Structure formats: structure tokens, C-alpha cells
Length: 120
Ligand SMILES: [Zn+2]
Image (cartoon, rainbow, N blue to C red; front, side, top):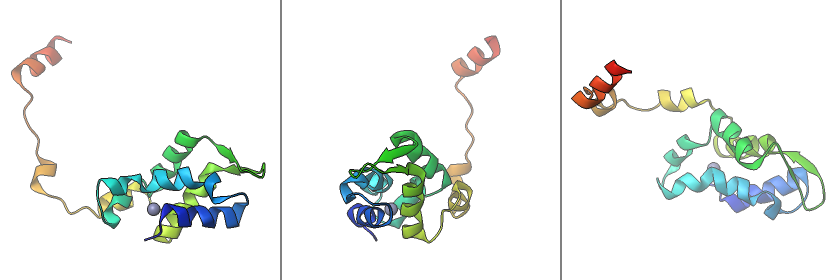
């Protein structure tokens, strides 16, 4: 599994500048590893929605230490592609989840909530 630093070195080789110019983006992608220690952490950001969330987080472009403007989406897609070989959709990840009974459970709302709904 590639470390964020190695992704950053790859970004610098591809787009110029220094690895530190890109490190925060790659750390953002892999931050979910703090919550799930194996490859499944990737289900939280390594997909099409994650690429666009990354752009929202870091802006449309970044400026390298050499003054070059690089689209953040290119860096995001590079990260996901280096890890998975392509950029999957969220639906592809969710379709791979094995359904458990608790996921499909539907519970009645408490009486107070149900009455409030009727009044509004
Ligand atoms: Zn990753």
C-alpha cells in the first residue's frame, strides 16, 4: 500500500514542484486509514465522489513551489488510480458491501417524533 509521501513524490515527478506541494492532498485521501487499518478504508474517499470532495477541500487548483498551476482533480485522480488502477464510483464500492440484517432494519419513530411530523 503506497504511503502518502510516495504518492506526493509521484505527483512532483508528474507535475513538477516538490512532494510537499502535494502531500496534504494525499494525506487527506488516506486519513480514513486511522479509522480502519486495512484496504477497506479506501471505500470512504477513493472514488469519484472523493475526487470531487478533495477539490472542494483544497480548491480547483494548487500552485506548486515552482509557480505552476495544477488542477487538484488531477492529483486526486492520480492518487486513486495509483492505489486501485482506476477511479471507481461510489456505487461500485457500495455494491461490494455484503448486506447485514442491521443495515436493512427500519425502526418505528418514537411517538413524539411521529406526532411532531404530523403537526408540521
Ligand atoms: Zn490511498
